[in-house]
Every structure is written in C-alpha cells, then in structure tokens.
Image (cartoon, rainbow, N blue to C red):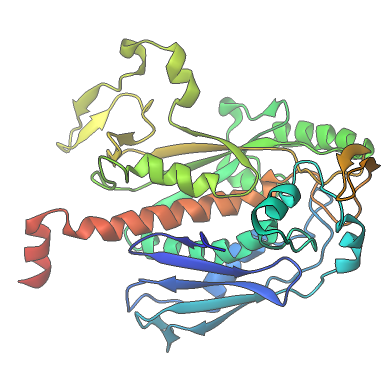
Length: 366
C-alpha cells in the first residue's frame, strides 16, 4: 500500500491499524533544537481520544503516546521522530460478522476490489483510528509554528441543521461543551438533535472551521503547490471529509467581483491590510498575511445501528444492523484532526519557503 506519506520538507509517514498493536508516525525533516516532550503531544491526543462523552464511541483508549526516537534531553535532534500510540481496548469480535459483507458508506468494497483482501476489524487502515498518528505529528508541527506566532482556533461550526451564530461566538466555550462549539445555545440545540438521531440508531454530519492567525505573507507556491490546494489535499485526506472551502468558499460563486474582492489599504504602521477577507487569507496560492479561514464538511458516521441494505460476497442482497462502538457524530473529535493536518501543511510549506529569496539564504549563511 502506497500513499501513507504526507509532506516534502516536514514529512510524515503513518502506520498501523485500528485493531493491531497500535498506530504510529515517523516525522522526517523536523529541525533540530525544538523543545519537545511527550506531554506536548499528549495534550493534542487527549482532545481526540474516544470515550469522553455520550456523543463519542465508548471505546476506552488512553491514547498514551511514546516518543521512540528523535528527541534527546528535551529537544529534537534533527533525526526522524518516531511515535507510537498503543491500542489497548480492541474488541475485534464485534466485527467478525462483517467479514463477508460490505458495510454501506465504508471502504470495505473498494478495499476488496483494490487489494483482494481487507482487514475487517474496524476497517484497518481506513479506520478513523489512523488519525491518532496524524494528531501526534500535527502536535509537533503546531509546536514548531507556535514559535513563529502562528496559532490555530478550530471548532465545530455546525452539526446537522444546527449552526453557530457569529453574534454569540465565544472561543472560551469550545472546550466547555462536548461538541466543541463556540456557541453555548447552538451546542445545546445540536445535542438535542443528536439525541434524536441516537434514539433512531442514526448518525449526523457537520462542518468544522479552522482559523489560522499569524501566518506571514508569502507561504505557498503559485502553481501546483498552492497553499489552498495543499490544505485541500490535507483536509480531504481525512476519511470522512466530503467538502472543503477557503474564505467565502462556495458563496463566492454567487457574488460579483466588487462583492468578493478584498480591498487593500495601508494600516497606521505601514503594513498592507485588507478591508474584508473573502479570500480566506490566500491569494494566488500564497498567504497574504491575514487570517487563513478554512472549513471541512464531514459526512455522517456510516456505522449506524439502524437496518441497512447491502450485499455479501456470496452474491446475496441482505439487510444488516452494524454492531460495535461507534461515534454518532464524527465532527467533535475531528476538530483536532483538521487542526493538525492544517499545521502539518503550513509547517511543510514554511520550511520549503526558506529558499524562495536569495536574500534569505544570504541572511542565513553569511
């Protein structure tokens, strides 16, 4: 299987399966001298781990990370950083009944067609469990970027038909409710909606928004490695993502040039600023120095207890009810996954940008 590596300068390779010994990641290209310990990574993994509310899978995993290499006396050495998160609470027997059939909305059928074989225990590599390794790597990228004043505010913008109200936006609320919504009233309404879905043994989708502040102008390449294109690839690599937007996104298609263009002006300190930010902080594939705003649309969790129609390997059309421990909604736990994939993208392109100007190389080497 190819395609488990992401990035060029700050490169990661994830490994492991949902019901194997564990999942992990190897980071290649992290500069030496970055202060890093397991607690720096654990903070991010704790935001993702299961079993924290009734709206998450009851699978109990501590998601404790072990740094196996690349760190000495509290600092990165410049060599590959290897990290592992052990699987502690697998219940593979829950999946024995699906070995010969294809779950609707899952990758069972496509894996069989591609490889002629699949790990049916929780989906193997296609399981959301793999994202724990991404989060571990993203925590390192975020720590790197934090040193340059680049920070992330990521939250659930909507669940089902319930959306946050910008007038009630309160970033402090994100960590204070189980749904990671910055609007207490919207969070309450979304919980009520989810409870109705759960009673029907159904699930729900939603949208995550990520605002990245402090990114200087000039990050990203103008052709195939546009910053927005790279962010899109990173976010779309998350299994349940079905839509992606930057700035005004799809709303731009129904606006005019006068409405969508962001007028420039000089601030009192002499810096170039914009009156609006419909572009979402990116022009021509390159960061413009304003906030980068992206959104990811997640489909409903495909593993639901309600009866569904499918087929098996014997050529029969059958009805199934999926067993096991599953999230009725993915988006609250995916907030940190979106944030970490964005951090990995920014870190990779920021390192690549070091050679964009001859003067920058002179400043470094002379």
